[in-house]
Amino acid sequence: MYESIIHPFSLLWWQITLTVLLIGSLMVALSLFLSKKARRKLARNLGLFILFDLIFFEFAIYYMGSWDIRYSLPIQYCAIMELCAGIGLITRLQVVYEFTLFLGIIGPLQAIIAPAIPFPGDYFFYDFYLSHAISIFTPIYLTVVESMRPRRHAWWKATLKFFVIALFVFYFDYLTGSNYMYLMEKPPLNHPLLKVGTWPSYLIIWLTALFLWSYFVHLLFLVRQRLCSERLE
Image 1 (cartoon, one colour):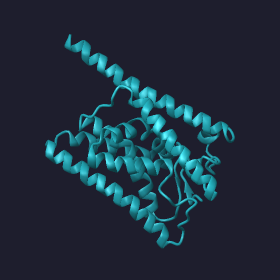
Image 2: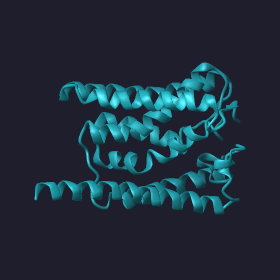
Image 3: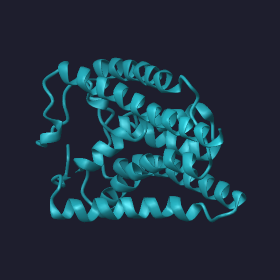
Image 4: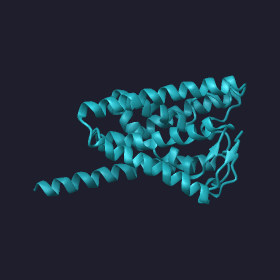
């Protein structure tokens, strides 16, 4: 299924990863100097671009003759997070922001750590990094630039909502013989980072890691809130 794999921590991996992180960080930092109206316009345009990218990707693989219901629908973990990132940037909906904040970073970050490009060509190479980087930096942008904050119990509520979505995807996989979200079997990649047991033990490990990650992000906001409270006293 995968056209090319960039091995983690190789020279090429470092060059690409550092470039992506630098560009994303600069965009967030420079946005702080824009007016509120300009920041909102930038966010909406970026959100529309993300949604267009999801649609264009489907047309691109259909045009190539590679579209297949078993692996082409945008219901992989990272595709769902990219969709939420686009909606979040356009609407600033609290529930979507919390979803991207607690769940939208760890999956795309893992994909960038162990990159696997699904199809040949420059478009798919750049789209892979663009879509995953956007999913990572969207919650950061909404938090830092748009000053959005999660609600108290959002971390476990967002995780439970994702578990419900995963159950629907699992049922779809079962009916169609697909492997979306890799719920039926592990990704066919020979990466040390993905050697985490067999089915279904690796799913339990992944879901536990997701739950712990959400709680870790929640703790970061708790610490920040307490530090701000102490400064005001």
